[in-house]
Length: 220
Image 1: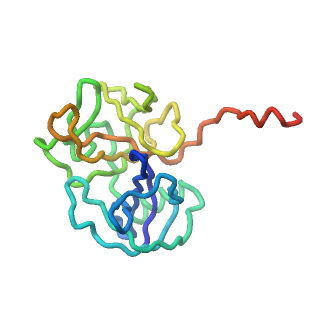
Image 2 (image 1 turned 90 degrees about the horizontal axis):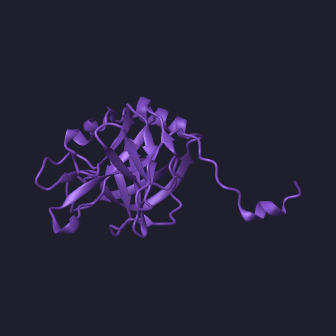
Image 3 (image 1 turned 120 degrees about the vertical axis):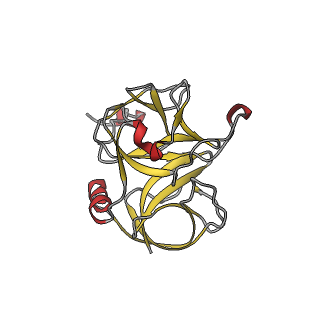
């Protein structure tokens, strides 16, 4: 079956790679042994691969997307991210949340006093751990403790960014983004939680990068 690579996020020393199958199903591409992809994986957003896979036998909701990939053959790469988004929305009819942060993950998110969204083992568990979202307000970059975060301007909402794209200062309202829930963990020995993350965005220009020292050698 074919799969479209739609996200690549940092996960300690590995890369969590998300995709959408030809039938519209969200998947997370693990290797045949059940591990995440290497941090320097060649898989890129917009790539399309033909894969063979099996289901991961042990899945803990909401992380139901895990598949074990046995073979991969590159088929093609979309000519632009816009073309990929058009295919996902017009052909595959993928579900997209639209509106405020309150619509995410079936409305089951809880929020810390610092604005971090999460689901807890004592609360309602959503049906999946990934999704597309079109926010109704700008998301503005506000780093905290040297970590990139994006702030939704109502009710003090902050979302940690874990993607591979170079961070932008502003994600305008109406931009398609991908969000996910991190794996279960227990902060400060409290109940286990899955925290909300921003995986990436689609259709925004890459931010300008600073000139490197090699430019000093150019004759102009």
